[in-house]
Each structure stands twice: as C-alpha cells, then as structure tokens.
Image (tube, rainbow, N blue to C red):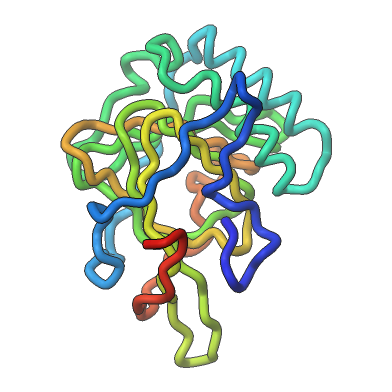
Length: 234
C-alpha cells in the first residue's frame, strides 16, 4: 500500500479490475477504531489446513496460477491476482462449510491451497466480531478480498530512527463485501479488525508458501504508534 515513505508501493485503496470485475471501493468511516487506542498485542490467527477446494475455488486457483506464473514484479502480480479474485467474492460456493468456521479465541486462517512450487498460497480468514491482527507486515505480496461482512483497517508507516524508531498512523479504512486490496512490501504495515456485529470472511492470496512458513507475517510491531496526517480527507 502506498505511503509517504514508499510511493512506489501498490495503493491498497485503488480499485482493481475492469467494469465487469470492478471491486467495491474502500470507504473511510468514523467507526474505525482510534489509532492511539488500537491494541498491538493481539495474537496472530491460528492456521489450519482446510479440506478439499470447491470447484469455484479450484477455478480461482487456476486463474491465480496463470497470473502469478507470468514472472512479473510483485506489485504488478498482486494487481493481476486481485483482478482474478474479485469476481469470485460473495457466492456461497466459494468455500466449504468447514472453511467458514471461526475460532472464539482469535481470528482463524484456513489454508485452502499452497502451490507446489511455493509461488503462492490461498488462505480463507474467518473473523468473529472484535477479532483483529497485531500490527504487522508481510513476507511477500498480498491480495485480500472481503467475501462476507466488512473489515476495518489501520495503516502505518515506519519512521526509522535507531532507538527512537516509531510507527506513524497514516490512514483508517473500512472495506465492505466485494472489496479487494493489492499490495507489496515495503509499505504494507497495518492492523486488520472485524469491527462489525457479524462474522467476516476474507480470501487472502500470498506470494509465498504459507504451508511451509505457517504464517504470512514477516514482523509484528510493538513500537510507539502516534497519530499522523490523515489521508483521504479523514
């Protein structure tokens, strides 16, 4: 996602796809939790290996394989994969009932597919109300699409300054059902939370072998996080 420190990163708020596959625009809302109040000690979600992929998911995996196999740079690959993901968000036949199960203790990650050559993985995330990630970044490019409900997000940029390094809050956003975000490191530091009253489901595609790594998170941040300039008119 684009930040002042990283203008070349893929903007997480840029809609992807053509008119036929356009994603719902992210909206900014006052209901997003305050950046100074956001807890930074939330546990990462539990990763479980999901059962067989549905026929629709198998088609999505084939579409992602075609996009990821072109050997393009991470940002371009993420945008292409986002284009492939968008049309599949919403229909009931994308996930099995088991892949929609949550965990009362923390958000849950179902590993739906890990490509044999390690080039990408597909994970279904289930968020019960109030569940959230720690502040983190990622091991590789990432595409996230909201399949059910909505996700709230707080974004940060790292201000490196030796022993006084800190995080600067840059933006808050709410992603409704159908939204797709595509981004590549660096500049991908954020916290994601289900601030709604119901369960939220999202599909994440990572440019890495999550079956081997067991997580998409490169680093969690426990630095001071102060408010920064509002972006997008907030």
